Image (cartoon, rainbow, N blue to C red; front, side, top):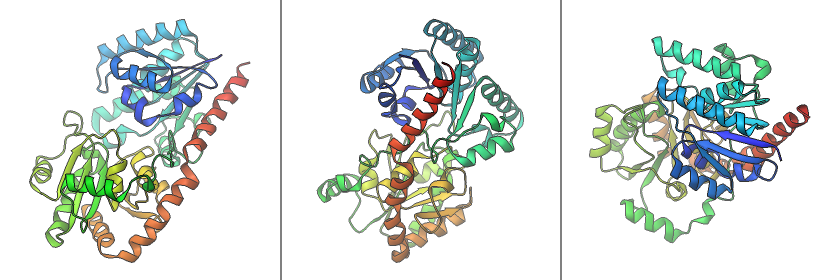
Length: 385
């Protein structure tokens, strides 16, 4: 059986962003997952039923650590002789594609799920441009996980069109709509979680799911909510996700508002976000940059409309006025206006809610994405017979 090696920088990406996909591919290939954090990686291996290999990588720019990881990965790939190496996340993409190229792996695939360089300037931007180009140069196929991201890559002249392809309708893993289903949660379960969080049945709940960082638009979100909460009493903002102060910190003023506004509830990272969607009314997701945001798909599958920014991925999942609302990026006033609109316009809210789940099922069901990727793998397999 041919070998398929999937590489991410950190194990949580395998566990959450590609959940179930590795087990599916195991039916057709000997799948090996490579990432950092051996203990977490072993759990992924057990869960997906695949072999794992730990090679430590960092998310920051660390030349010495990166060279060590490159050497270890090169030696591993020379030994294993896989048919396909498929990388995800920026650092794993660069290290993995260079190592696979040096090891003469015939099929070298990199999935692009966002471009950090889009929110960077100066010397760092130039460095990230070079790194991204090297990654794509060493790849045989580059898979942007949205059509908008593909357009950005071409506009920035990072890669040739002939190497670029979007799988299915976008997304790296699709969405399991049988798992993300609001009917799985009873009124009693919802009531218990609301009581635990201090949320009343009469409260209107905005939810954000993701890393609590600047690039996700959390500064604008907290400030918009702060203004709205001065005018309306029965509203809550639920923040679900980890703070990352070492990578992309929020403003001190924003942190102060999160800590001091009793209507803002921060619950940190949650391994299962479904219960929090189940007690919410609207996803507010004012991100600056995305590949193809899982949170927006998850919210839709759970029957929630979303307010998103007009960026790639978000504006592909959400059709303005149909299953959500679209606003300009980095615009607190527009965010505040649309949050207040959905808070007060019950007819519009009901319309968006009615369309939310059907839009996800028809376009992003998980098996559609898996089968499309498998078809791509098989075409490569036939090419290398």
